[in-house]
Image 1 (spheres, rainbow over the protein chains, first blue to last red):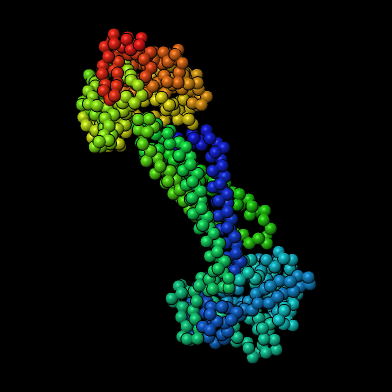
Image 2: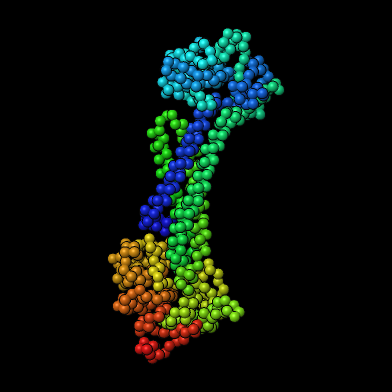
Length: 356
Length: 233
């Protein structure tokens, strides 16, 4: 640490540049991880809010909620601790100038997926809905009448709830009968047992079973992964993050290697004086550690700062534990990059430094 | 008591027809408190002698014993430990670390070795060498003479039993060179160390107790009058 720190102090510009590069890489990693988290929650936050263990859908629907069609009678075939029926459809909601792609959830208000309102009231009548608070950001207000693209029915916003987006669309929660009226129009009476799926909360997914072969118990995480585009999106972003880990390791390796090569004669002289490989190697690793920690911490701060100034339309969400793990990984890969320099130091022949 | 001893030490490079004797069979001993000069033209084997005496490489045959430790069959790691404990190097090229202040050059040694000079001893050493005012300076801010004096301080700081100096006056003008030799002599006597100076600068031999001459790998002790002749020739 003694050599490492004194060298940084003496060569401030040189090491500031290296820290700068590490800072930019960590900034990018943190920001991408923020985007990945943000985009993920755009798709899944409503499902996460349920805190459900599994969802039961029609086998033919291929794990897609809108494509699944079952009846409330199927509840009898299902074993699970807590159940909640769910009807779902996508539509365009219009209120005056405002237009938004929404996902309408029809539920029973006494079951566990009923959201808590953060503003306004719960729905008590048909055609009343609790809306995602992202619609509030878009300009929708309590009392707004929403015209829907697929039906003559009009819905009224009576309250707002947080964390209610499903597959990138804000959710409207309403009575099951509201959903059926929207979906089936005049035929809603005959179809009043029609739903899309049954959400189940239990101890674990194994304890949830159905005796009907046409139905499928899908673990909540699996269900989310099968949302259209979800897996592709998160894979792409994670791939970029993993690449950045590799890149930062290589950058550090190159920088330190160049610095080390410049100092070969100095290291040689020190080795001639009897200073051990171990001491010199530890010094290089300690230096890398210092540079990486400073770079990552500054990158972290910069990311949070940027996040605070971004418009809400940018889907970033910072998951601090994930970011801390990524930061630690960056520090570890930077130290791996230093291994090259350590090998170089070990190979230096002190004899050459003396000119023998 | 002999602090360093070479018994029939020999160094050869290559093999077969291409075999070169860099240093032929050499016997050499040095006692505590002696200041010894090894002179000779470049390529004569001086450097080979220095690196063997300094424990930087092992002789091809024969023995090298430093302060009762036989280095002949030691690996680099063990030799490195002996070097750290027993030997102070003063090198032709500055052996100072460019990013450490004069004080920190010494501190570095505290980091890797125990039983160095005390604060008081160091203060006195700085004073003797006339570098007390340079403590906070970096090597780049020092003149060649100052740097060489700091290098001497560094070599002495670890209280080595042997000081090996390779052309310690090469980059200095005559006056400075004499000054450095004077200092080396003084420190050798007052600390009871052994100093071996390898040089081609025969002006320096006046300061030395013994002078050896190296020619074509053969080390030979010079009698006093021979040394005088060397100087005038």
